[in-house]
Image (tube, rainbow, N blue to C red; front, side):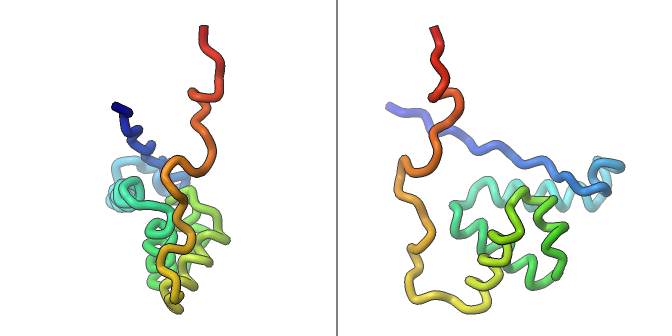
Amino acid sequence: MSKRIKPALHTCECTGCQEHPYSKTAREHKAINRVLAGLDERNKRRFVGLLASQQGNILLLSEITGLSRTTIYRGQAEVEHPSQNPTQGIRRAGGGRKLVEKNSLTS
């Protein structure tokens, strides 16, 4: 029986959260990252793309979420112009890089 590894929660890197970690803005940014932790790649892109369409500040969203600007632009385009293939951009189970802990040799 394999254990499912819970994704790590990204820590916001914006100056507001660094200076005032208990402010309303910092709580909102943490809430965004909690939602993202439960989504797959495609839905992360689309959710942050939707936020980018509403707020318009892609650089700030990149700092908040840790996603690259090109990923956010792609998610914004997917939200504004839905594609015909909804499964595009989702990796199969076991896809992607292996965890560092699995790659290192332990004695």
